[in-house]
Length: 148
Ligand SMILES: Nc1ncnc2c1ncn2[C@@H]1O[C@H](COP(=O)(O)OP(=O)(O)OP(=O)(O)O)[C@@H](O)[C@H]1O
Ligand SMILES: [Mg+2]
Image (tube, rainbow, N blue to C red; front, side, top):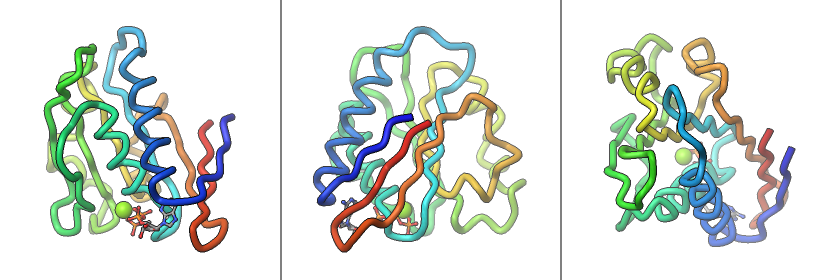
């Protein structure tokens, strides 16, 4: 278990970028790498995701997908991963709605790396080897981020 408390949004961005750079070095896989970000509203999941995207070499801002539930980006850095998917399940009406974006194919493909917010909403559809990252509020500018 890795636990860290960040003292600002920019520290959370940095942590996300650091984690992405570590993911780029993962050995070859049989299916997509899925990171499930759990935590209440405003605990920093999207902030972490923005840093993560930057760590993969993705330029520009990765916004909170307010209306769209997912986006796909090409991974510019050289690695086994070719596509990065940012998914937010907060507004899904039901878990099966995730299947409408082609979830089964996304998780099958080892060249995909996925960061998903609100995994509780689609718990049954998550791969068993998904990496769970928990976010919690620890003060106005503090967030505790735990990886298991
Ligand atoms: N240490 C910190 N880490 C991350 N965000 C922080 C921190 N301190 C303050 N913040 C602020 O908290 C907010 C976090 O928002 P963010 O959209 O990342 O949360 P979220 O977990 O994605 O929320 P939601 O569930 O609504 O999608 C931002 O406004 C950010 O500036
Ligand atoms: Mg968010």
